[in-house]
Image (cartoon, rainbow, N blue to C red):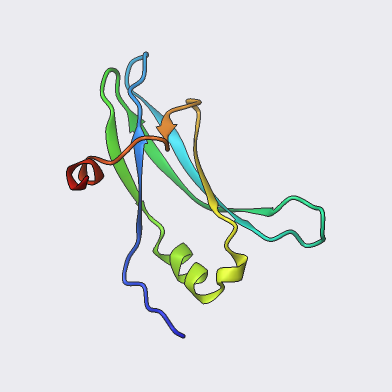
Length: 106
């Protein structure tokens, strides 16, 4: 079965910082099955994007992952998940919150 993915975005929440405005990086890596049994999944860097931070201001941001989702749809057995994290400011990205649009639906 063939799937066509027009676009796919990953939404993430950026926490406010205690310091003045600055810059950090957002990185996404994907996981694939290990090459050998009893090994950890393989990690592959996918994308890095700059991120501007603000004091006392948090917001939802998005990053396009269209190509990644196309690969997942073509080879679902290779999908062992993704990891999104910030470089430069630890804990800047929250992945355990509910998007406002999801709250409105509930």
